[in-house]
Structure formats: C-alpha cells, structure tokens
Image 1: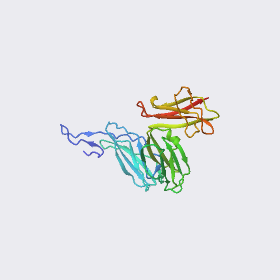
Image 2: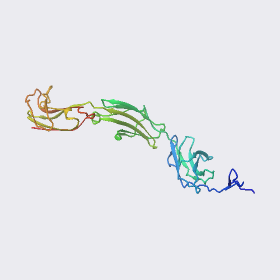
Image 3: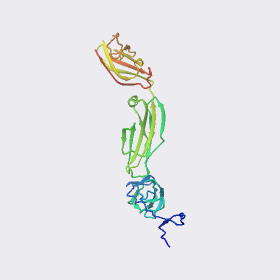
Length: 314
C-alpha cells in the first residue's frame, strides 16, 4: 500500500505489528500581522501577529519571513513568541513581512502577509557630550552643548527641561552653535533632593535624541535677607509669618528697621508674634524694614525648605 507523504505514520509498530496512521490538522493561519507605518533605517522595528489555534491542541510556533526591495523572502524568526524586533538597514528601501504557524508535528498554516512599507532614510540629530551625573551640587548647574544633524535639509528644535517640565524651546536651532542650559538662582533655590535636566533635540523628520544631566541639591542651611520696604520713619512694630519645612529649633528670624544701614541693627523675633523694635536710629538716608531668615537642619529633618514669607509693620 502506498501512502501520501503528507500522511503521518507512527515510527514503530504497535503490539499487533501494525503501524498507526496519525491524523493531524494544521494550526489556523495567524489572523493578522502588524507592522508600523513609520519605518526608518538604523532603527528597530517591532513586527507582531495574532496567535493561531491548533485543532489538535498541539504546541504552536511561528516562522516569520522578511522581504526587502521586492527581493526573495528569507526567514528571520522561528519560535513561539508573537512578535519580533527587526533592525532596518540603509540597504532597505521597502520591507514586507509574512508569518505562518506550525505545530509540533510540522504541519504548517498558510501565510499572513503584511503591507509593504517604504523605508525613510534619515539619521538622528546629535547632542555633543555625554549624559552626566553631577552628584551633590551647591550652586546652580549648567551644561554647554552643540547640536547637529547629518541631513542638511532638516530643521532642528531644542527643548530644555527640568524634571520633565519644559523651561526653554529653541527653534530653529543652529547647528554647531554653543548653547548653555543653566538653572537660574531662583530655580535652583526652589529645589531639594535629586533632579534631572534634559536636552531634547528633534529634527523635522521626527527623529530625536536626549541628553540627560542628573544632580542632587542637598540643602544644609537656608540663609537670606529680605528688604520689606523703605519707610519715612523708624518702624515700631512688625509681625512676620512664614511657611516652611524644618524643625522649629532650626529656625531663626531676625528683623530690623534700619535695613539701609551698612550694619543694620538686627533683633531676634518670633514667627507669628508681634515684635516691638528697640532700635530707633539710622545712619543711611532713610529707614527700611528688613527680615533675615536662617533655617538649619535640626530635630531629624533631612530636608528643609522655605515656601513663603510675609511681614506687616507699623
């Protein structure tokens, strides 16, 4: 008896000496295959497909093939996963993919074929330097950089951000021009703990690159003076209010009514309590009310901050 080569037969006879015909059904054809519409050379590309079902509950795997520039199909993946990350090269002007399922008995489904995608040949823009970890800093950090792009016709845009919030946008950005991303004293003073500065450069073709600078601002003391107002006569009383994050033992408030003097007469005051000035003299041309704040780490506070400060006087 002659059997078709498509019919599976057991490798060994049974107890009665008969070889057994193994009836097997192929798995279903993968219902769909997905390829991104935007395909760029030098970039990764993820191809995915819907799973097949085997009527005989056999294990199912997949064979993925690729064709580029209308050439021959070639297998690039064989396995049980339902997606594959491919790399597009500059030799590829068009790409297409097809996938089929197979079971553990080597029965194959038909192919499911993707649309043909056109490859865009456009390089990423560049940012000079490298990502940096500055560690603990005590002054506003800055980073000097230049940008470029191998595609002469692309327009470049720079976005400088702090902790994901855009601070400055430069468009169009100039190639090979030295830019500086620097935090102002006010921006730096509002920070504590770890932070991230990013410089993202995008070209008009949709490519982008990001440079990252991380740092930590560890505040050991907050110390500043505030000139509240000039006055025509010496202020007699003042009430100071402040919102802060610190232990009360680490907070010192001083006030004066001759702030314009070279050496003001500072007097210790209490937050939320009326303070009566002892001083009534000045050496400057006019009187002025001033407040001095000093906050140090105390009582187990690892992070300190001053959120707001206000004063009223007569």
